[in-house]
Structure formats: C-alpha cells, structure tokens
Length: 412
Image 1 (cartoon, rainbow, N blue to C red):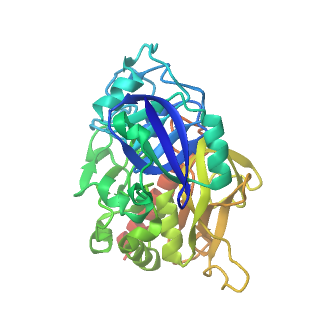
Image 2: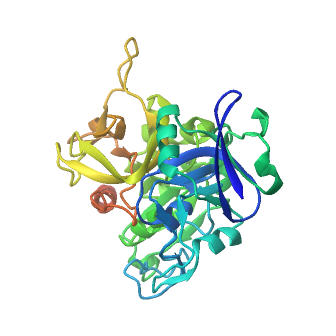
C-alpha cells in the first residue's frame, strides 16, 4: 500500500491511494505530468526530471519493459565508438518518483531485458500505481505543479508536516547532474574525421544530444556547467548549451559565462531547453516559472522566421518538450528586448516563447556570430523528429564559420 500526498496550498493536502512498486521508501519532489504516450525509459532517464515526481497520463505503462542500453543492431544505435549508450538519455533513473495508473507486470519486446518495476527498484526509485492519473493531471493543470510525496509502509497512514515537502527548484539541480570535468568524444574514425570541435556545456545533457552531434562528424568536448569556457574558447569552433533541470536563475555563474561568450565570441552558439533559457538570461530577457509547464511529445510550435536554417516561417512543427520555466515577453512598462534579439518560435497552445535568435548576427556582413535557442528538443528520439535538421544546420553553420576564419588566416 502507498499514498501519493500533494501539498496544494499551505496546510491543505490531497491524497491518492495506490500500490507501491520499485524502491520501498518515501520520495519527495515537485509533482508534474507528461503527456508522452511512448518512451517512458527515455523520460525517466532525462536529467531534466531530476527532483520531480513524474506522472504519466498514458493509462498503461511498462508493457514493453526496459531495453539493454548496449543492445547492438538497433536503428537507434549510435555509430560512434564511445560509451554513451544506445537508447537511454543517461545511465540512471533521474526522476525522484514514478506515478502511473496501471503498471504492466508482464512486458513484451524483443529488446527488453527487465520490467519497469525491477528497473526502478535497481535504481532505488519508488513508484506508485493504481492512481487516477487523469484526475491528478486535471488537478495539476488547475492548481499548477505542486509539491508531493510518495509515502510507503507505515508512513502512508500519516500526513507529513508542510516542512517535510521539498521544493527541488530551490536547489542547484544542475550541479547534481552535470559532468565534473571535461570529457572529449570523437566521431567514428577519430579526430582526423572531425569537421569541427564543439564545446558542449552540460546542464543535464540528454544522451541523444551528444549522439546527434557526433553523427555530424564533429569532435565534442563536454564541459561542466561552471566551466570557464572563455579561457579556452579559441580551441573550439562552436558552443552548444544542453538541457537541464530546475530554475535557470540558480546558475547565474553559467549565465555570466554565456553572456561574455555571446558578446565577445565570433563563432556559432546554440542552446536547447535550459541552454535556451541561459542564452535568454544572458541577453537580458526575463525568465519565469510556468503554472504547470510543457511536458510531452505533442507540443506544436509556430515558426516566426527561418533563423537562416531549414525552418519555414508560418509552419507549425510538432515537438517534444520538458520544461517548467520559459522566457517572457515584454510586459507593459518594460524595456524592449535587447537589440538584435527576436522570438523565433512560439507555442501554438499557450503562446509561450519556444525559440529565440539574435537576428542581427544573421545579416550579411555582421561581425556578430549567430546565436539560436529553442525551448523544445529537436533530438528527442522518443518523439517527433520534425525539427531534427536543426542539428545538421547548426553544424553546417559552424563548419562555414570555421572555413571563413581559416580562409582569412591563410590570406593574411
């Protein structure tokens, strides 16, 4: 027996009774929901879910089990000689707890090696099944994402004090999931086959970001969230900012590093999710906490411009998203956005900003390097691939800028 208890308002609680699975201990965190129908292994290993109790709106979970992350012969197996796995977004289950309506005990898939329940238990993550997740999702949409607790055993019969609920957004979650020291990965064929060298600032990087970059035949050096990139930037041809968990304002050290890079550096910069928000803060754009965020594989975004990439203005793209913060429009009385910056994509459901671009940097003859940021995940293998070409286009920009620099150097 287990209970999911939510702190909806101060001293007001709501409880859902269910049956525990996975690890048999209590879990606290921010209760959120995802509308993703498939790819629960990808979602649960996404570092952006660090500190959260993840609710799946899909009624049945676990029916195809968990794959071996090193299974050969798959279409999703990366062609590189690096140990980053084939399927999952990280080596560990990142969510603090799992909430499902019905758990399938008997899985069936030719690549599955264990059940969802045993996998969660092995990673010491508790779960609760038998919850009316549609009612819970409606509650979260109306009340907003809220603090919650999965209570098992004797604790299930007791209402915890308000102080027991933990708000992960008050912590520096990025420091928990980022690499601790720089790590360099080479494409198939080694450094000699690399077209460029990318610095990837890790705020909680999903594995498929690295796989997508390496498929474009570039060397990638993954650096920590607080790495002083500007001291070593001349050895790189581009800067890529990853996704990550929590509040972007909790890592102002990273914001300061990126602010200097976008103002002084002459090479292309691209950010995804948290990286997009960091770029926005560095440019002087405000970020805010959303009521319940956008999490799922079915989020439509409207392109406002091409961004000098293969993006068709006016077209709606279906995207995968996982974020609880967003960049803000100007409110009445606020100064205009910084000169040269403009929205690139907007969400067709709630009109939140889904992408930004430094437009002035894309004009002919501009001395500023181009900067892009998208709130969604172009690389997410479990969801739509409408915007996956953004990776290819970014690398092409990096290669072009590299050739331009080398041409000027040769003629000097």
